[in-house]
Amino acid sequence: MKRYSVSILAALMCLVSVDAFACAMRPRRAITLVAKTAIIKAEKALKKGQKSLARKHFRQAAYGMGTPKERSYAATEAALLYADSNAISRAIALARQAVLIKKDYAPAHAFLGQIYVEKKSPMAIGFLEKALVLGIEKPNSVRGELLKAYMQAGKLTEAHAQYALLEKDGYPAEKLAVLKALLDHQEKAAIAQRS
Image (cartoon, rainbow, N blue to C red; front, top):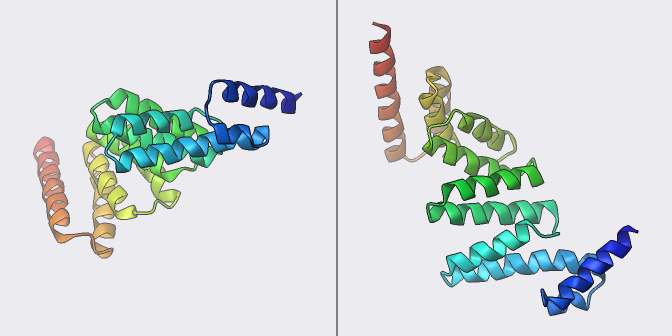
C-alpha cells in the first residue's frame, strides 16, 4: 500500500512538471531527488543574488519529501533569508520547522537562539545551549550570543563562564572588548539595583 501511494505521488509530480529527470527514476528515489533538486536550484539562485527565488526553492525542499537533514537544512536556509528581509515571524516559523524535522540539527537551534537574543527572549538560552551540545561548527559565535542571552536574563555567573571560554579560545579582541563592556555595565546595574 505504501509503495502504491508513493507511486501515485511521483506520477502527480510528473504531471505538474516538478522535475522531468525525477520522473524517469523510481518513485521513492524520484521524490528524494525533487528535494535535492530544489536545494540545488536555491543555492544557484543565491549565487546569482536572487534571494526571493532561493527562498521559494528552499521552502519547497523544506516541505518536500527529502531526508530529514536535507529538509532541516532547507528550512534553516529559508529562515535565514526571511530574517534578512525582516520577515522575522516567518523566519522563526521555518526555523522551528527545521528543529521539528530534525531535532539534532545544530544550525537551526543556533539560528533560533540568535533570533531570540535579538528579541530579548529567555528562550534563546535553551536553543543556544542545545546548539553547543550538538556540536555546532563555529561554537564561539554561539557562545557570544549565549553570553548576551545570559546577561539579558540576569544570569551573570553563566555569562562570565561563557566570557572565560571565549577568552580562552582566542575570540577576536575587539569583540571580547565589546562583550566585556556589556558585562561590566550589566554588573554595575545589578549592584545599583541591590543598593
